[in-house]
Amino acid sequence: MSAIEVIPSARRLIKSLRDMGYDFAQAVADVVDNSVEAGATLVAIDIEFDGDDSWVRIADNGKGMKPDALREAMRFGAERAYEADDLGKFGLGLKTASLSQCECLSVASRWNRDRADIAGYSWDLAHIEKSNKWEIIPIDKDGLNASIREPLKERPGTVVLWKRLDRLLGYKHPYGEMSRKRLMQMCREVEIHLAMVFHRFIAGEAGRRKFKIMVNGNAIAPWDPFCRTEPKTMRLQPVVLKIEHEGVNGEVTLEPFILPPQHAFSSKVAADAASGPANWNQQQGFYIYRAERMIQSGGWSNLRSPDEHTKLARIAIHFSPALDDAFKINVAKMRVQLPGAIREAVREAVAPVVKLAREVYDRKPPSATPPSLPPASPPRSAAGTIPPPSSAPTGGYGTEPPRNGTVDGHVSTSVVATAPALTIDEWSTKLLEAASDTERPTVERVLQRLRSNMNG
Ligand SMILES: Nc1ncnc2c1ncn2[C@@H]1O[C@H](COP(=O)(O)OP(=O)(O)OP(=O)(O)O)[C@@H](O)[C@H]1O
Ligand SMILES: [Mg+2]
Image (cartoon, rainbow, N blue to C red):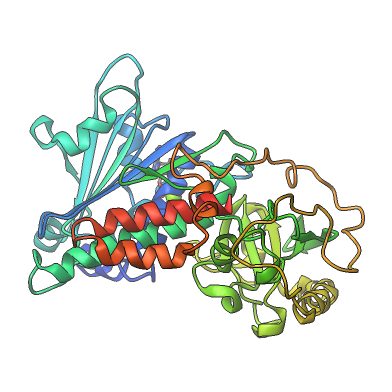
């Protein structure tokens, strides 16, 4: 008897695929993965509030796709050969991440440097609902409106456009204040998330060209969880663990850091920035990187629980996509599990780090130092009696050029240093109080940049 093909119901399955668990920032990050992969050096994310017509656009200057490659890219389960350190894996992210946030995903691409031809296709849930077929809709010339065409005017690249943001703006009054505020809040969350998960790419540490991410015109500064430019951060000896999983041999590298206690940071602003999106206690633990892209940001992967006394311990764990199965990476690239085979070795490696973190935490702060002012010439050695890290290799780490407190020409640290009467937090409150509703998102962005600059 010959086999019978049973095609899934497009209408039903495409709806279920919307619920893989992405939040907005994670969805954007999954699309940005593709831009990294396409060799882009710039990705510009623009979020436009216009009630029902609000949109999100993610545009890169990568190599672009010819029409047939773009059609394949639009397929659920797109096929291609992956290289050893590719960020892609499932052939799904572009579609599942996008449709988790919107009802209409358009992708347009220019592949030729000399010719401005653009190919474009859309997945439109309203069309699928009607047709119940896995059909994409070609975007004709008229459909290539300014928001799609503009980023591709000068160069090849790819534009991903999300329209009908039902998951983001499911409000009764789409033009209302609630909707607008929500979208502005999303901008901020996206900035924070991308600054974290792509920090090694933005800082040019990922073995690729430097990668710039703009959100609504502002360049994002990398957020380094290990505060490696802080003079009192301690870098401990890395540990390399060998692992064999279902015939695949690989290595997992642990790089432990002990952050300075808050009072020992070079400034209060730097200490505040170091606390991270989820704050000190939740940001302790493992930062798991797959091919340099952060998948997990903090937490002890069930080896221990977060503890105020160990919050200064942060440990980078690196693995390569060859070990994806061992780490059980999920489609949304948001979750991994420490492989059973190395759990005990990791526990052992972590024990002295946690012990040291606790000792540093328990040490009394020197009483005379005002915490919000940077010392005139910061000491270069590790704090107190703790020996400096023994023979930690310096490759990549610790070799970053010193930053001068400015990123992209914005506010410098001296603004705060010469105005000691107010801390950055006090300034922030005052500025936000004085700003009108329309100015507030801009002020928030500037403040975030200022904090990043102070940190960098
Ligand atoms: N911005 C882009 N520039 C060039 N090619 C792209 C871009 N976005 C997607 N593609 C192509 O489309 C394919 C499908 O992308 P998609 O994100 O759906 O899956 P993937 O990246 O292969 O795997 P994963 O599901 O793990 O993300 C990619 O493999 C890539 O070939
Ligand atoms: Mg992808």
